[in-house]
Image 1 (cartoon, one colour):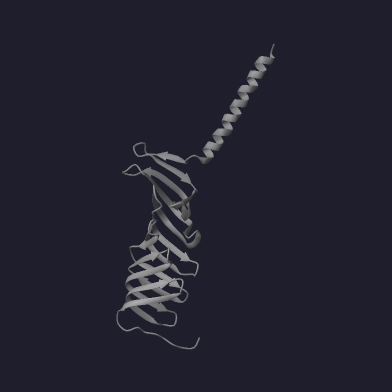
Image 2 (tube, one colour):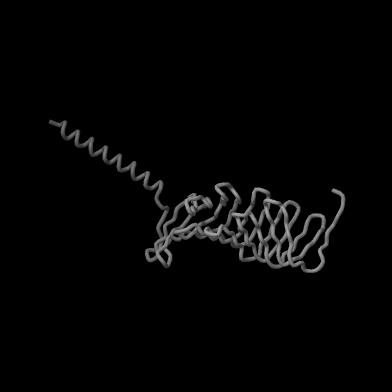
Length: 217
């Protein structure tokens, strides 16, 4: 006579265990917190994101945390906190690595804004640092609207802004370009263009004389 009660108790216990397991899996994937009831903020810890455009992967990155809100047009706005292990792709292959203090990604689309101690490095070792970079997914262009510092091998130069065509692997430095190398050579120009395929850096609109130093290696 006790068997039906025992079976019912076992069923209830099993349901409770399943519910607990499901709850653990949900919490494992759920946001770490929700803030400000008036303007919902959902926070995820240690996520990795991938930006797609026309079915192709354009970038991927990791962040210490992200916060999701809704924009003026009810679009998804993702605020990135401490961007790291960033990869920018060209034709499915890694073109640039990057990191930044923070960023903003708005959906739909793969446009991305990075801000604060932004660093990009390409496979040839060209490295540039700035405080803001804007990625245009449609044009595959990387724009730094403010001052940028570039280091490439034994060369260092600064410019007012950078406009990079990642699809063509061409980097254009615009405004007050000042180039130096370890041997003491100096060039000042209005504009410089670096083409990764040829490895050639061209200057346009020289300002004053160029000082070139020749000597033994």
